[in-house]
Each structure stands twice: as C-alpha cells, then as structure tokens.
Length: 210
Image (cartoon, rainbow, N blue to C red; front, side, top):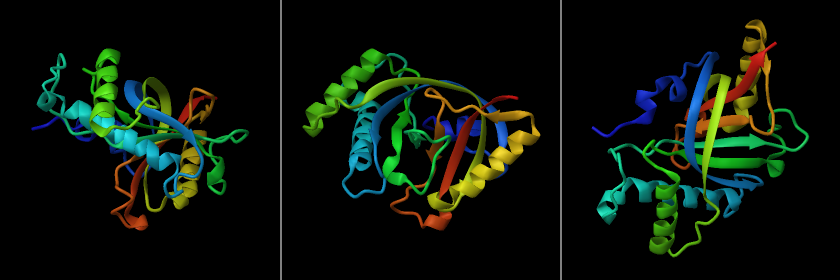
C-alpha cells in the first residue's frame, strides 16, 4: 500500500471543522513563486501548477525512469498547498485577488535531497521540453499555528478565518504573520472537478502566545 501523507499525518491534513492549535514540523516542498489572481485563465498560477505536478510526478515515477533514489518508497503525491499574502495587508483580503503574492507548493517525500530535486527538474525539462527553472526546493517550518477544515467555496473562507481568530483569542494566542509566516491553504479537493460548495480546504495561520 503506497504511503499516504494525508492518512499518516491526519493532524496536518485532515483537521476537524472546529479550530485547533497545532505545531507543524519542518517539511520540504517543490515550490513556485508568483503573483496575481489565481483564477486568471492561462495566468501565472495556472502555469505554476503545471511545473509543480510535472516535478512531483517525475519524482514519483523515478524508478520507472531507471533512477534509483536512496530510501525511495511508494507514496501518494501529497495535495497542492499555497502560502498567500498581499503587500500592506495583515492576513489576506479576498476582494483583491489581483494583488495576491503566493508560493504554490507540493510536499516532497523525505528521501528527496536537493541533489535528487535538481535531477527531477532536469529530467522533467528534458521529457516535457519545458523550462522548469522557476521551481525551487523549499524548506519550511511553520511552528505553532491554528488550523481548521473549511468546507465550501474559497470566497467563503473569511467566515472560517474569523472563527479561527475568535478561537485563538480565547486560548491566549494572537496571529503572528510575518515575511516568513503566511496564510496557508491545503487543497484536498480538485477545484476543476468539485462543486464550490463541496470543496475541502485546510486553512492554517501562524500564532504566538499573547
């Protein structure tokens, strides 16, 4: 049975619909940075997804390409994630999608070193005949956070965010946004195939003790 990060680390990928505090350890990602409205047809965000999945599946299928990664194990490619912010805004303003700055990313298995990542970028570029140089190996340790499962449209997320912030205020915490700590979303649904009202998204915000 392939290793499934969502099932093995439920505390990070399948939280309840009520806010809770979690400490998130260091993880490595394949990431692409960009800005602008993620809904723009043919825009930078859509292009970034092609790069992310191209590399993610190159790594997953590396044994079939005759490339042996030390410690490789069968696994399910983890879900798409995103870190979001806007200049001069605490958190995010959903009415200004055109101003979004983002890091779109997919978690990498622990056996993927920087060297193996570089191999995957080169191999994906060779096979797809596409420039994958915008993809980077990104290490992030989020630390103390509040998170919650949001069900429904992305545009309805502010209500879930308000509930998260009300919860942390009652627990003696406050938001802790910075250049290194961002609004974080983990997408458990494929927005291309799922009705907006049935989307499931993990929302995570950095916090600190008051």
